[in-house]
Every structure is written in structure tokens, then in C-alpha cells.
Image (cartoon, rainbow, N blue to C red; front, side, top):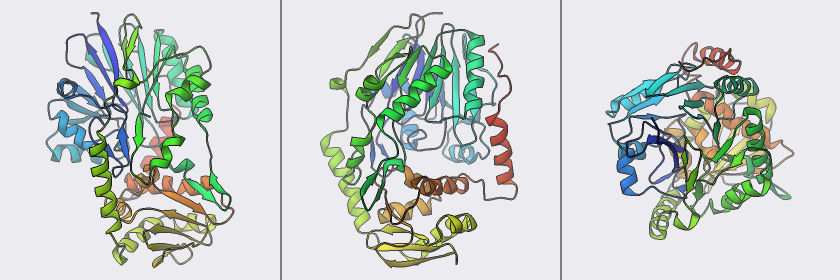
Amino acid sequence: MTGLKLQTLGHASIAVYRDDEAPLLLTDPWLVGSVYWRSWWLQNYPDAATLDWLSRSANVYVTHEHPDHFHMPSIRRLGSGPAYLFPALAERGFLGYMAERGFRAEIVPPARWVSIGDGIAILSLPLWNDDSLLLIDTPNALILNFNDAKPVAPVVAAVRRLADRIAKPRVLLASYSPASVINSFSDANGPVRLKSPADYVGYACALCERLGADIFLPFASQASYERADSLWANALRTSYADLERFWAGRTRLLPPYTTLDLDELTHSSTPPAAYRTASPETLAARTAERLAAEEATTMTEADAAMLQRKLNLWRFVLWPLFPRGFAFEAGDTALVYDPRRGRVRLAPAGNYGDFVIAVPPLTLREALANDHPTDLGITMFVRIRLLRKVDPRKVYGLFILFQLDDYGHMRRPGAFIRWLASGLRRSFPFRLPLPS
């Protein structure tokens, strides 16, 4: 059958479909609204007719749990018609979460091809970091959806070996812009920048080379930061203009928001002038409402107790790393952590310990109440002041430690060992199977 297309939408969504038919597959639906406490907004929103069409998708695959990939308002808009597919990660609370809300959710068997239509199959590769890759085999092309997973070298090598055996044109989709606090640091001399646009483009080019990609589609980076306290981060985004400026190698670079004919490998793209952005009135109202709620929030001893529990899981790691401690500054209150004593105390806002993480108070409270402070590292409004000579990468590591508990790897006996064993196994994959 002919007429097979791939279309990029929203942020990290792709639709695979045949002409005049509903999508066989949609991925990572963030298609309406905003994420990360009204900070992230889409550069180009699908219109109502497109959303109606997407709601008829047979399958929706979610690579991982970050809200810019697993966005419940978008899923509610899509409805209960599609089958929602998830990778076989070590912890699978998302299955119960979806079932309680009336959605069909199931696990895709890892490293095994699953047919989703005539001549089309998917292969899910769960990774150690609670993320996954999705490979899509079609009659005339192999799609490699790497989203923002950053797999380790043995996984990339295994995918390359498989792609060489399949021997079809390769279409790579991968992020190319920071989605973390990596450029949110400052010290006495001003901002501390760990990576530049050239670094991100260089990674994308190197990944294309390692995979032998024929086409690169910009992906998982189509967001703008619209809260007043996150506007600064827009200047640090890696844009499509940066991709064009620094692009190198034989892989053909296509624009964002592209429809690619998977038979002929021709394409059409939405020009930036035609992007459907959120209205200025909506942006102003929603972000102002959120900032007002932040300013009206005061931190309490209960908040300090929740933070203390999270930090004390790693107390004997944090103590040697940050012997003077550190603080979370939330409005006019600081939650000061002493790793030697394992205590968090409330104090007036100020400089404490080795560094201070400045977080709006309501956001900090909600992240702790939701047991997901990892997300604080992705908001683009969290700022980190380095008070002494501290390697910023160590501070970045704090958010990785949070993730281990946020995703359930520290909550039950054996959970950490199970996660560690599965992560090691998945970081060194054996020969991946060919599609049947």
C-alpha cells in the first residue's frame, strides 16, 4: 500500500498515517495548553480539525512520563478511543493511573516488533533513565524516534546494526535544545553556561552520523517559555536557525512541523509565519494567574518535612558532595538543608551553604506534594546560585537523585535492585531482531 506519511506536531508528537485515513500511530501527545506550571507553551498548536483527526488514532505511544510527552489534558482531548501504549519500564504506575481514568493502557513488549498495520511495526526500547526509544518500520523507510532520551553508546550501536540489516532510508527524530537547569546557574561573576547551541547541534549531527541517518527531523524542542520568570530561557533555546547554521554531515536537515512522504521521501512544511501560537490574551491571563498564586503561597513546616524526606534518602551522598549544605529559596523563605544532621529548617530568604535553588513557592509545594521534584529541573524558571566553587554538574546530579525516588525505584524493597539490573541489561542490548 502507498500513501504513507509521517507528520510532526506539537512538541514531540508524530503521526504515522495513510492518505485520507486516521493515524495508525501518534506519539507523546502534548497538543493543547501548557506544561511545567504555565512555563512551556507550544510554538505551533494543531487546529480543532486536526485534533479531531488525531483522536481517531489507533495507537498512542508515550515514550516517558514527563508532562511535555505524557500530557493528560491532551490525552483527555484525544479521548478513550486510542490504545495508549507504554514502554516496559521498571516501575509502571502509569498503567493504573490511566485505567482509573477510563483509558486503555498496555505495555509494549521490549525489543520485540509489534505490528500496528499492513507492513508497519514498532519496536520499543526502554532505557535505564525511565525513557524509551521507538523504532517504526514501514515498507520504504525506518523511523528512529529518539525524542530526548540520550541513549548510551552501546544502545546507539545496536540500533545502527539493526538499521544496517533492515537497509532502508533512515529518518531520525531527536531533541536539539536544552530541557533542564543546565544553563540556569550563576556565580559571583554572572551566568554560568555549560552548553551552547553549537554543542546541541553537534550532538544531533554526531547522532545522525552514528546511526547513518538519511533525514533529520527537528523534534522535542518546539516550546517557548512564557512565564515572566522564564522568558530569559528563550534566548538559550537552540533554534532551527541554529540547526541550519551549525549543521554538518551528509544527513538532510528538514524544518520542524513537516509532513514527510515515506514512499518518495519528499516533504512539505508549515512556515513559521503560519504557526498557530497561543493568543497573547491567553498567555497573559494564564501566566499572570499562576504568578499571583505563587506570590500568595507561604512555605510551611509540612513542606520542609516533605523536602527533608526526599533529601535524606541520599543524605550520605549529599554530605560529602555539599558539606556546607544548601537551600531551596521559595519567595521570602528558605528551606535550608543540613546533610550532616539530615534536617531541613525554615529561614529567611538568603544565601546558605554551597548553593541556593530559587523556586517559586507554590511550584515547590506542588512538586513535593506530587512527589515529583525532578520536574523542578525542567521548568526554565528555577535559578541556581553557586555560592562557592561548586561544579554545577554535581548540583545537576541532585535532580537525577530525585528522579530515582520520584519514579518509584527507592520506595519498595528490591525496587532499586530491579531498576539497576534492568538498566544495566538495557544499556548493553544483544542483537536486536529484524521485523517479521
